[in-house]
Length: 191
Image (cartoon, rainbow, N blue to C red; front, side, top):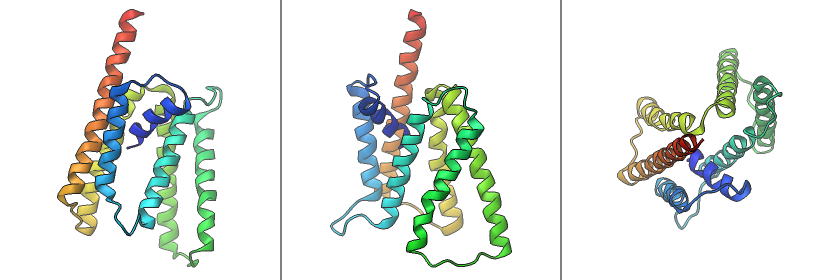
């Protein structure tokens, strides 16, 4: 959903020109998210709040990355992102019991941290130098990967309503990307 939120955020925060088709696609994507998380009378659980917070901060990162001066190396931006995320996790010490990880867990944590750092770096480079309409579709590949891993690791299969929500989110995002490409093509032909 991040590309949909970034579109809405650019309209609201950056006063970018976002017409009614883009707003409609963004709202449809939000409806898809609501089908996936289905908040009920009991409210939204902590896992959903964590996912929504991640969505918010990822969108803010993507919106602000475009405005970081080009003279600041992407490696520094990735390092700053990693440090801020690590510091953001510190408040969990107040509500979680610390358990000393085993040597194997430390090794896995180091490997995962290194992979995430380079993923941040490559994502930042892509957002800074690439066209969003080319970069953003790769975000949707993570949905398929998450579904595959969920099934392979935990035997999880989403129900029909969640699958409809996922399809709406992907469809809305792909529509936005198609529109973005059309706008860029028109701008290039006028130039």
